[in-house]
Structures are given as structure tokens and as C-alpha cells.
Length: 283
Image (cartoon, rainbow, N blue to C red; front, side, top):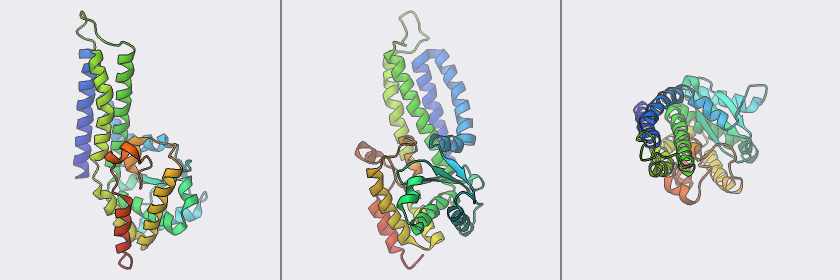
């Protein structure tokens, strides 16, 4: 199912790029967009995890850098029956974490410096177990590809907006150029399409990853406590790295609030906490 969703998302990106390319540059724009779409589709499948990690300035750590965290990931990965993922630290004070990688064999877990300062080790264990749940369920491919696609769509919107503002339109004698009105429409539609792509990621995967975390760690109450803390601290310390295009990858939406809540891919924290508290004694 995740593979099919990925193919559908890539097809949606291709279609949007082709339509936007023709609107902005006529036939030549269409050919340019087609070339870009092929490169983008291949690149997002093979390199999207690397792109996302670089977007967040994530730094890989080994057993000598943080022995306690590394051994914790190793222990939980064995319980999840997946290969040991790479471990990354993001230099950001806002507490959060995400998983990436196109398969369990290529999995990676990234957590912010803030999460290590705010949470207890039991709570960190719950968060890591949640992210390993995503890797074990093979959620990470569609999550990471979607983040890359959403970022590309936002960039496309910016390109269209600046093209229209700078007068990049066609004259009456030039049928190959893009129309300024079409560029403005693209500037509005592309970012909105990025939000729709994020909404295409099923919110149910968060509940499934929470259940997996309770199983791997045996401490559902610790993850519940971590979720409450992460949500509270995220409002106090905004996320500086990444962008709303990657919000669906995190254990808790770091860009929540205002209009973002209308397009949230995460279930309400209170609902997740209630489910986890009901698992107490059954994990």
C-alpha cells in the first residue's frame, strides 16, 4: 500500500510540474518541466532521505559520541527485528524527532538536541521506539518522499510568483511564453498542493507507531509523557531547521498552530496520550 501511495504521489508531482511548466513557458517550458520531473522522481526515491537530513543539518553519531543513546537504539532495533539504523542529532533546541530511509535496511533516526535536554531517558526511549515503529512498518519511504515533493511544490510556487512579478509573461506575438495570470495561479496552487500531499499521508500511521513503541519499550506511559512535553515545548521553542513541508515526518508537528492545524497529518496529542495510557499494563 505504501509503495502504491508513493507511485501516486510521484505521478501527481509529475502532472503538476508539466502543467505548471506549460503555463509558465509554453511548449519549451513543458519540455523543461518534463526533464525536471524525471530527475526529481528518480532523485526523490533514491536520495530523499539524504536531502531531508541535510535540510535539518543532521549530524551522524556513533557509539563513542553518545554511548547511552546509541545502545538504546540498538536494543530497541533488536526488539523491532530491524537492522540497526543510523543515528543523527539535529542542532535545534525544539524537542522533536523523526525517522527516514527508503527501507528498514536504509533506516535512520534523527532527534534534536532539545529532545535530549527536555525529556528523561525513559521518555527518549519511547520516542525512539515510536520512530523505529515507522521504520518497521515501512512508513519512512512515503514520509520522506512526500517531504521532498512538498518542498519542490513550494519552490515551484515561489518560482511562479517571482516570474509573474518580474513580468515573465508572453506577449501577443509569442505563443510559447507563459501567461502572467497562469504564473500567479501556479504560485497559489503549488503550495496548497504541497499541503494536500501532506494530508495524503494517513494519520493512522501515528497510532500504529505509538502501539509499536509501547511494545518495543514496554513503557507506553513514558511515550505519553514525552508527547505532552514535546507539544508544550514546541510552542515555547519554535523549530528553526526544516520547514512545514517536513512537518508530517516528526513525532509531533513542530509547526502546529493557526492554519497549520487545518492540514495536520498528526492526530491530536490528547487522543494519542489517552490511547497510550489505556495500554498501561498491557504492553
